[in-house]
Length: 184
Image (cartoon, rainbow, N blue to C red; front, side, top):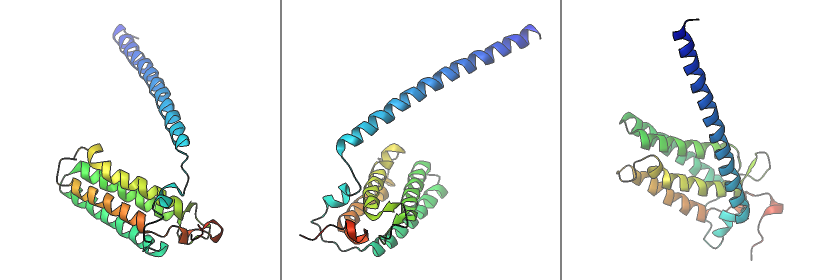
């Protein structure tokens, strides 16, 4: 091996060693952040009913069946919005729209709207996840760097709409009868 090849090999090894050490450090920091987030969530004492039950005094106009159709419409809204932004070269808004479309579609596919227990996400947990999706829509413009642009209004409006749907959905109707809140 020539001295030039040895020098190149040593440089590559040094880079790999530094990169490996940095990766380990990043992994340690990520693990600590995850531990802190989990600890914070446990302190909040959240469960699947926490968010939907916060709106229990609001009029319940939306059934689980209608809510499922609204989820389908919101998925289509964000897919259409993402496509429109992508075609116009608006990368940040397109990414935010596709993230929200994926969130709504993913949760919807696994939601037990009927309360049969056949799918892993209960209807009330779906309500809690809807609150997270509304938050993602509201902060998406800031995260993706377009908060001061007109495109942000599409996300702020949908976040407000999601909160209205969250408040007026009858979450107890989509739960198995043994879990339903008794009317006061």
